[in-house]
Length: 144
Image (cartoon, rainbow, N blue to C red; front, side, top):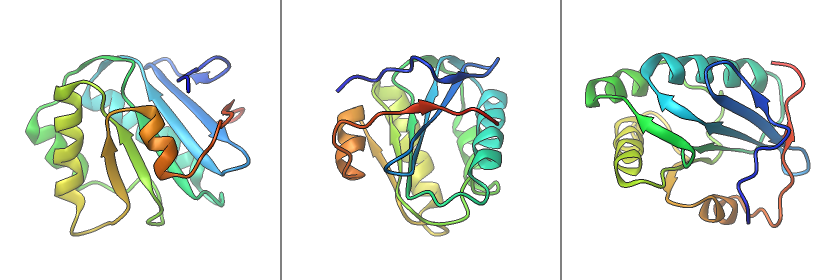
């Protein structure tokens, strides 16, 4: 499976927001330098998009991130902010690189008492398998 982002909604901060319409899965692909402000802006856009939608899962894909410029304190702060989604459906983070995978696992552990459904994997194919997606087609988000 490819991790294509052609046609995705590219925000100025390097976030591509897409929806797999049949499966009701939102996918966020993070690009370039990822900082606390980029994460917060991306979370805000996804939160706005998800309101009132009947979603059943989400993928946060960091395999195209050049650098994750976050400290463990930043991860702690993010883990205690308002959740991006109102329900506890599966939310899969694709970590890829060791340092990104480790930070994502730290976030998963810090939120474990307040929420369920967060999983961290290394590949997009693992994310698709957890969400039971076969050959998904993601389309760009028209309005954010």
